[in-house]
Image 1: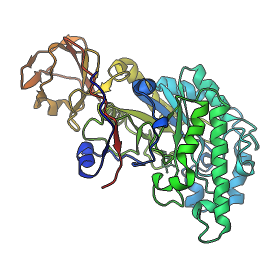
Image 2: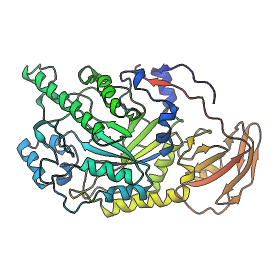
Image 3: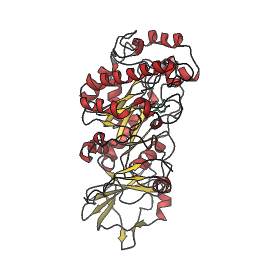
Image 4: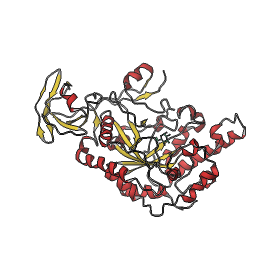
Length: 453
Ligand code: GLC
C-alpha cells in the first residue's frame, strides 16, 4: 500500500465533483477530534462486513403510523405514555431478529434503543421519568436480550441512540428564549443523554457500533450545528472509555468514523474513498417503524441498490420495523431471506471486498475486488454489450461467468468481454475476472468532507 497522505479538507466544487452522485451525506463538517479517530485496522471488520440489519421498534410500533407519530400528530403525552401499558410482547423471543439477520446475511445489527419519543428499551436509571420498558408493562430489558442474542449469533452489536427527546420543552427552546426555564430543562435532556449513553456502553459488554440520530435541536439546523449544546467530543470520549474501538457514526455533531447516506434514493456516481454507509428501509421508506401496509421493495431493485453501494465502497444497513409484539411481517422476512439466499450464492463478490478498481457506470455495471480477483457486477446486460471497460494496470488471466470461461481482449486502451448470447435474466450478472497479481489497494485518503461552500 502506498503511504498515507496528510488529511485534507474537501469543500465546494471539488466536493461536488468528487461526489458527482446522488449520495447525500448527512452531518458534514462535524467537530474534529484526533483522539476519536480509528485506524484502518480498527475499521477493517466494519468495511469487510458490508451488510447490516437495522431495527426500529418502540411504542410507535403499536400505532403503526411511523416512528414520528407522536410528534407528527401531536399526541398528548398522557395518551402516548399510556402506550407503555400495552407494550408487552409476551411471546417475543429476540432470536427472531438475530435469526433473521443471519439469514439475511448481515454481519452486524443496529437496534434502536431509544428513539425521539424518549421510551428506552432497557433498564435505564438515567431515563427522565423512568420512561422505559423495564419500568412498564413488559418489565424487560430488550437491550440486554438483544446484545446477548446478537453476540451468540456471531453478529457485531450496534446500538442506535437519539440524543434529543421530544418530551423536553427545552429541546424546542434550548436557549430559553421563549421561557427561561426551558434552558434548564434542555440541560436535563443533555444529562439524560450522557447518563443513557454511559449505561448503553458500560452495561452490555462490548459494543461495536454506536449509531446516533437526532443530535440537532428544535428540528432546526443539522446535527453539526448543535454541537455547542451536546458537546459531542466530550460525550464520545466518555463512551470510548468503556469501548475503546467502538465505531461511531457522524450524527452526534462530531464527524464520526464513517459517513452516512440515509434513505431509499438511488446511488449513482463515483467510488467514495472514505468509509460510508447507506441506511434505508426494506419497505417503501415512508416509515422506519412498523406499518401494516408499507409495501416491501422489489427483490431486483434491492439487489441493484446493494450492488450500487458496494461498488462505490459503501456498506448497506437495511431496516425492518417489527410489530408491537416484536414480529417481523412475513413478507418482509421473506424478502430479507431472499437476499440472504442470493448472498449465500454470490457473497464472495461482496463481503471482504472493496469498491473498484474500475469506476462504476450508473445503471450499467460496477466492480468490487479482493486480492487478485475483480468482480464485475452487471446490472444491465444489454447496455453492457455496447460497453468496453477502461484499461487496468493488471494482466487478466481469465474471465468466467458461472464457471464458464468467457472470451476477452485486453490492450493498453481497453478491455472487452464477450457475454454469452442467451443470458438468463438476473438481478446482477457477475463476471469473475482473475488477474496475474493482486489489485493494489488505493492510497488511503483521509478526507474531511466539510460541506462548506
Ligand atoms: C431519519 C428519521 C428517523 C430514523 C432515521 C434512521 O432521521 O427521521 O426517524 O430513525 O432516519 O436513519
